[in-house]
Image (tube, rainbow, N blue to C red):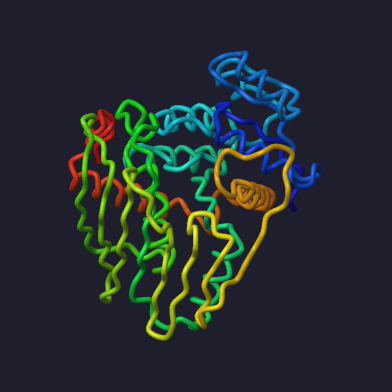
Length: 339
């Protein structure tokens, strides 16, 4: 039985603001944010004041030890995910962690294993999967209306080359982790979660040795192919087209779609409710969908979501590792967590 879920927020940055703002559009009888933690007390207090949160913690251990928190949303930078998820799991908290789950497959495997050992819910926050348009396309694919899926074409790019979280190796930067998690997940999703049997990738690196642009192909058993491009150097169309033997559909702004081109060419529109504050990122009110998924799963005693399974998060991490290997992006954590 789904119940009131009491959230803690780890990190008081932009995406955490958007998540808290989105959760604020859900019924207060279902979701309550009871605590926030940041490295600096003043940041936590400012965030708490802004979002009407009762407790502000300095440091993440205090949040992990807070007995009033059921589940923690982790909105920290990529290279902090591994330690923060472990900390929360080890203190008995369920976790929703921003994507990418970790920097590599080795770290991700350890987190999935720890969550299973502790019998706690863990989900990588691939919010795209919970948008109504994704659910709609999935139903159409499952009913066979597109026929056999043969191709996915997806591109995701913005001018982001001066953004620290993307350009710095020390923050786990690069488009494969920041944007590629989206392009990879939509390819796997369209092909029903099957693993590709070949990955071919090339890319452009900056002076830091992180990728600013990547082109990759995922080749699936049976001849299906997914073509993806990520870029921090230029604005791309940011669409994902799923082509089957009978028909195709296109998700516009595919990572958070409110528009969908149907098989007959008509455009289906969706909308999001108004929130208390402005958002930092596009369509961030849609984060409410993944928050409700977490509540439903925890209420039903499930340790993972059927829409973003642990196996699929590990597959995404595996593909990211393979792409990084081919384009020449190496993190210090890769040797430490070698498979």
